[in-house]
Each structure stands twice: as structure tokens, then as C-alpha cells.
Length: 220
Ligand SMILES: Nc1ncnc2c1ncn2[C@@H]1O[C@H](COP(=O)(O)OP(=O)(O)OP(=O)(O)O)[C@@H](O)[C@H]1O
Image: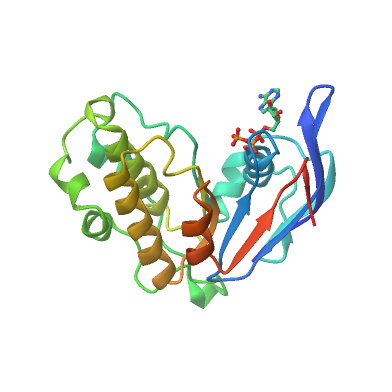
């Protein structure tokens, strides 16, 4: 469903990606692993349209999406749970989960369905009962773990075909981290396609169908 072909990218005069290739089949969970500063987040920025690709191509469901605007890439069904969560301080939990919601893919239109049952508010609350309890709290009244759950819930509310998580368990208490990993297992069970960046190698290896390593901006 996603194919990244030999992309190159960087910031100003500094080149960070020197040839990253990566593919994700429907319902696969794939991880990009690598030491700090190797270009994992930069690769994700290129896929989601936040950073221009200088060379190479990216295809999603067979169509080229290289350097399309970020909102168009999101509309095609790629949702990002960004590093740092990026919850809005002045929106309630419920508002986060309805403001960005989108209906699921329509298989009758030839679109690939992302999962068996579409994500609506009830299903997101079932996955994260804590969000239901905090439904009327503002984004800035939540703990780090709750914000992370909200960031994942918000991404799921768009019924993405591909969910991308950038360091989703970073900085969380062990018990909350465990909850997020349980959620990822649940998503895998439901057939959600996922691209995951996380530094817990053993957990990543257990969960993922495929683990790719990035070294100095190169993934082969
Ligand atoms: N906005 C930016 N402007 C300039 N350089 C940047 C920018 N963002 C990242 N870089 C640099 O690009 C390189 C790759 O960064 P990137 O965030 O992709 O690494 P990463 O593999 O995700 O590592 P980390 O785990 O530390 O986030 C690093 O050297 C970083 O300093």
C-alpha cells in the first residue's frame, strides 16, 4: 500500500536522507529503527508531506504522492500520531475526536478498507476508556499518557488506511507505555496497517511483521 523508493531529503544545505526505500503491504505493521538523528522522523515528514522530497518517489495505493500537500496526503488515508502528541490545549477530548473525524474507506468505490469496523467515538472510547472518563477535559488538563491516547484516538477518528506513529511511547510511565503497546497489538489484530517508530527493540520485534533499519539516512 505504501512504497517509498530511494528518497533523498534534508534541511537547507544539510542532506539527511541519502536513499530511503521502504514498503508496507496492507495490514502489515512495519517499523523503522535507528539511532538518534539517523533520519526516522525526517522520513515520516517526507511521507506525510511536511518536508519536500528532493529525489526519489513515494506511492500510496499505487498512486504517486511525492510532494503532494500534507492535507491531500491525509485525505488519501495516511494519519500521523506526531512526536510530542500535539494536542490542542483549548479543545476538549471529545472535540479532538470529532473535529477531525472522517468516514471509513468505501470498498464499493474500490477503496481498500482499513479495518473491519470503522472508528467512531464509541469504538475509540472502547479502546481507551480513560478518554471517555476525561471526555470534557481540555487538552492541557490531561496527563502525558492521556494526551498520547488522545493523539492516537484523533488519528484513528480519520479512519486511516495507514497509521504512522512517531515515538508514541516516548517519555511515558511504564504502566502507560504498556497500555499503548496493548493498543498497538489490538490495532494489529484488527488489520490496521501501521508504520511505527519506537526505540524498544524487543517490543518492536515482537509486534512488527517487518523491521527496517536506518543508518546515516539510508534504508535498503
Ligand atoms: N528542522 C530541522 N532543521 C535542521 N535539521 C534538522 C531538523 N530536523 C531534524 N534535523 C536534523 O536531521 C537529522 C535527522 O533528524 P531526525 O529527526 O529525522 O532523526 P531521528 O532518526 O528521527 O532521530 P530522533 O530519534 O532523535 O528523533 C538530525 O541530524 C537532526 O539534527
